[in-house]
Image (tube, rainbow, N blue to C red):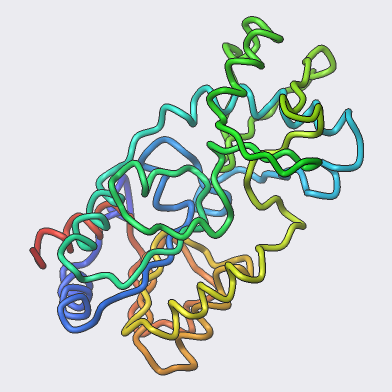
Length: 278
């Protein structure tokens, strides 16, 4: 395919997805590919450059690692925090309002589903707009921390850099960055997200399995299912014998389990489907 034609779903695929949404209430699992049209890149989509995000073990190991993370994340949040929901997010919200969805689990940390008006979103990997103190457990607002970091590091967030899906960017020199501590206890601050090498809380995983067991069908949008945190629910749905639909640009680890596989853009597919089932 040439140009942007690879983004357009085939008419027969839209018809099959329409029929499924009419006959079943779907649980949705969304991934980074859904947010690319909001200007947030994904990790493994076509054309995505190789990325090496900081692991949880690295983050907690040294003050230098935390300085490097916050120096880069501070720049990334200045851009990611202004991202807006795209037609894919809005189409899912419309489907929820029409009673066609049984729930939504997102692997994304950008909060765009909630900003699109979607209710009861399960943020499997947390939210980048919240900050957690590792020492006292206090949960605070990212915007407030951003203001504090701006005061401690004037002009830092204005640097040009390429943003990553988790709000990180690549910066060569971070030694001069001043890290803010917890206002409550002076402890170590971490974004309220699940880092690579960190596990999703067991009660949250159990809740997601319950949602999968209660669903009539599973719809995956924008996820390569490369990590087990999302793939395990696809495997559960397949084992139950319910329809599994995957909408993603490029191959996924769940393709062999899919009842319907649509290799196209998420926004284009969901917006077209939303128009037909309304």
